[in-house]
Length: 286
Image (cartoon, rainbow, N blue to C red; front, side):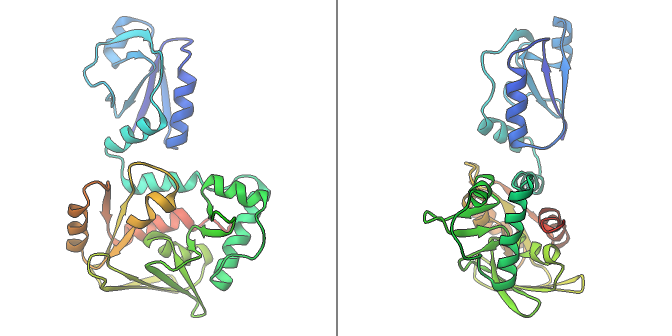
């Protein structure tokens, strides 16, 4: 997907638009200065600034070319919906979403790793009060705190039972927030796992065993659906309920047909495993 912002020189709304785009995507965004009406017509600028996604204006298709400065720019919600409607794969959206939740400063990053290691060692979050680091992780959506300030979620882990149960190294049982999170535990920890989940359409069991780097799925035709509530919000609220294993592609297609309000896509086993590695494989790296 190519994203380009057309603008006139010294456009006051160029920076606000770029800042909002940075909140919804980490794809590279190029800019182009438009200097004449002819250039506006040639490149498709209908007021400065104009966002183009793969060469098309997602907000005003066929609008009259113009050099006039806009009085406002699209909201982050409007930008996210426009990018999604332009055919961006759900796997790419999820990757961007989760990468933005990775803490950058050393103190918060250390706290995040301590929480993840506690879940991996015991199946439960660490015991202790809320700290500024935990509050920062909550704001990032790297973890979710309960109203009482307790750790309820630390992606990929859940402190309460979910559809996705994972046994780590034949020793510790944990719960994962979604299918992709369950698949991400093995590459994150570098340990073997056994995932036990259920098809949301009929409750039939699905098992994914990862041993010494190889993965076996049962049933062999199982797939994963990747989707999210278009309203946005924390991952735990808007997408984790929709990232599920299905025993067959037909079952996944039946579910998506029954839930047209949930945008997303069905991905195969290799795609699901690769996505899990991208999302979680680096979280405990020093």
